[in-house]
Length: 311
Image (cartoon, rainbow, N blue to C red; front, side, top):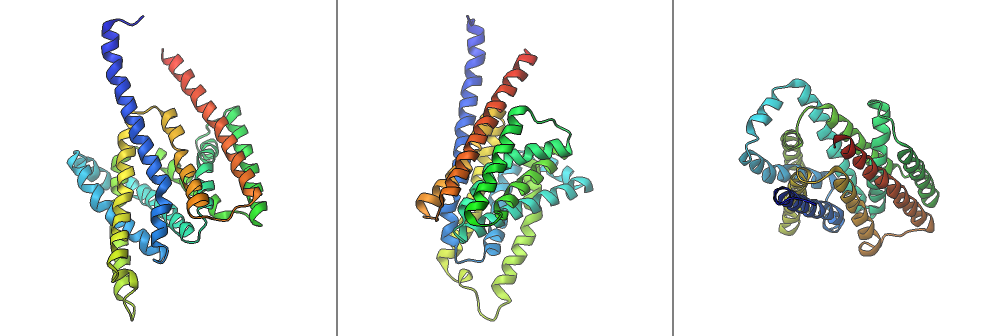
C-alpha cells in the first residue's frame, strides 16, 4: 500500500508520462499522415520540395531551440570538427530519407516507404550487432527472419527487389548508428543538422528558380509556394513534439508509438491515394506486423528486466 508521500511523488510522474505519450502519439501520427500533404506537391520536382523543407524547418525550429537556451551547446558542437563531420553525415542521411519519401509519394509508391519504415527498427538491431557487437535476443532474431521473408514476398509481388524500401530502412539504420556514436544530445544535433542543410537548400531553390530560360511554375504559383513553405514548417512540428515526448516517455512506449508512422503511410497509400496492391503485398505486410509484435514483446520484456535489476 502506498503512503501519501509516495502518492504525491508518483502522481506528477504519471501525469508527465501521459503527457509525453500524448505528444509522442501526435508526432508519429503527423509523420504517418504526411503522404496526404506531400501528394499535393506531386508536380513540383522532389529536390525542390526537399530544399524548401530544409530551409523552412530551420526557420521555425532554430529560434525555438535558441529560446530554450541551446545556443552555447550548438556553438560548442560546431567548434568540434569530429562532431561536424558526423552531423554532416547524419544530415545527408536525413536528406536522402526525406528525398526518397517525397519521390515515392509523387510516384504513388507510398507503400514502399511504409515497408521500409516498418523494417527500419529491425535493420537497426542488425547494425547494432555488426557495428557495436550487441547480441540480438532470440525474439529479435525471429522478428528479423520474419521481416526478411516479408521483403522476399513483397519482391515476388512486384516482380523485383523493393530497393526503395531497403534504402529507406538502411538510411534510418545508418542515421541511428551515427547518432549513437556522437556524444551530442538530440536537440543540439538536430539544430546543427538543419544549420548545415539550410544554405544548401536555399542555394538550390535560387538556382532552380532563376537559372532557367523560363521561371518554373512553382516559383510563380502562390498556392504551390505556400504549400512548399508550409511543408517545411510542418515538418518542424512533429520534431518539436517528439523532442518533448522523448524526455517524458519510456523507451518501450516510444518504440510502440513509432509504428504509427508506417501504419499511417500504409493506410494513406491504400485507402486515400488508392495505390494498387497485390495479395503478395498484403501477405508481406501481415508478416511485417507479426515480426513487429515479436519485436515489441521483446522490447517490453527487456525493459521489465532492466527495471528489476535497478530495483
